[in-house]
Length: 286
Image (cartoon, rainbow, N blue to C red):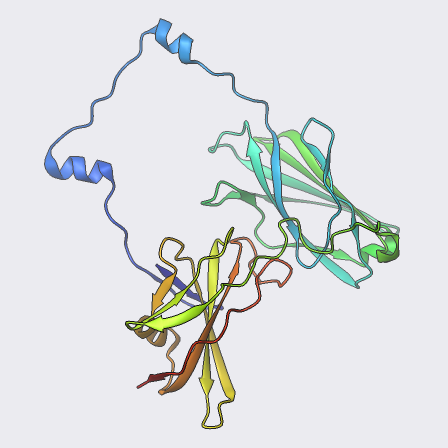
């Protein structure tokens, strides 16, 4: 279980020891089989060429038409927007790239007044996705017909790209989906408190949850709010006592609610994050 304040400290409980730890504790050593050259040849597989297997996220609050792929891992994702500014932070699933390889991304922004190039290093998260730390700022894309290209390199060798051409919102096709690629997650169907724990119903595709603790006054109005993140996916619940301790909640009456999102939605952008669940019944904290 992990709670993360926004922003703030992290509380982590250690998990169970793995199989290797059990083997060491019991003195039972694992047996490793060595295949003959012939057997190795029979089971050998062809490593696929490096390519983008999927784009799982592009940016906050921006819609995208259907992705088009040239068959070599180069993807185009048109976007339509009239906003003053946009921020892109694509996340990729890759194929044929060794997990030990250095994966970098060359970012080129072309518009009417500038040609900007930068380079960032991508990190491999625990879900097997390569993500950028932070976002790339794009200024007035609709007005300037900006084109942003993200070229992916493994150990310095370019192998694929994602191109995001912008156009004014008025140019969007009639079937344009204004939501992000994965669409908005559903809200937890219900949240409740039982046996000293906050429980909620799991949400499909959710990779983390955000808990809101609302302080309720004598008239039933919420007068203050605290938030903490939880990535408890196996048992969607958290201890009320731990939430209180972690957030330093003062004594009073509280209601709790929960929303779901994906791991890479670092700012809980509403395009991906779900609406909040119902608020629980009153819980008195001392």
